[in-house]
Amino acid sequence: MVWTSSAEGNPLDVPKLYEPASSQGLRSSQAASQSVDQNLKPDHPLPVPFNTPKENQTSIFLWITFLLVFISFIIGWNNRAIVINQFPILAPVVEIFDPSLKFRGIEISNLLSRIDSRENGSSLVVTGSLINQENYLRKVPSLIVVIEDERGSILVKKVIKSKGSYFDYQEIKDFEVKFLKYPANASNIFVEIIN
Image 1 (tube, helix red, strand yellow):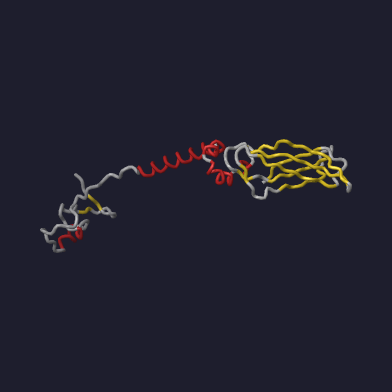
Image 2 (cartoon, rainbow, N blue to C red; image 1 turned 90 degrees about the horizontal axis):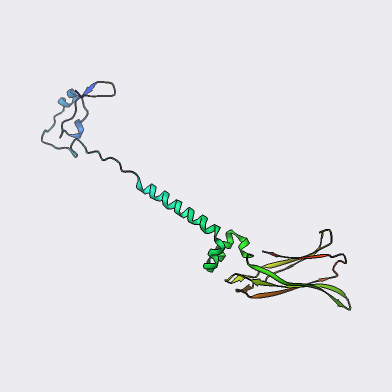
């Protein structure tokens, strides 16, 4: 035998199949005291069908999509140099997140230094070239030329600014810098690309 009880443990009458919602769950004495039209059907008959909830397939789909996007990003980031070579239009965006790509493939070549003697003294002249080895248009970077002594101490340095110019694939940009009254104990000359 199956019976229904209230929270206090008192037995409750199970409502009739088409009993109005207003009398459902009332004790029999309370239900009998109310006048109920037996022919009146409630808004929804009992038993109300219970639909088992479906598994949330949307959240699984979102997680799979997120995982695929994340994996694609990691693969793309690890191969960003190849991606830029294939899609040069993406270079300015990628270089925001990895500024070192601005210098990758830019070669410093034809470095020469000479003493230029004149009537008012001598100067040290450093010349060279920058070559763009990547197959897309790039901004010409600035350079810093450093003169050191034998111990590696910096004696003099000068910055060569790029002036916002660009160069294409295999294009060569020459540079020259003069050091007037350079130190007599100068031993090493270094040229570095800077942003």
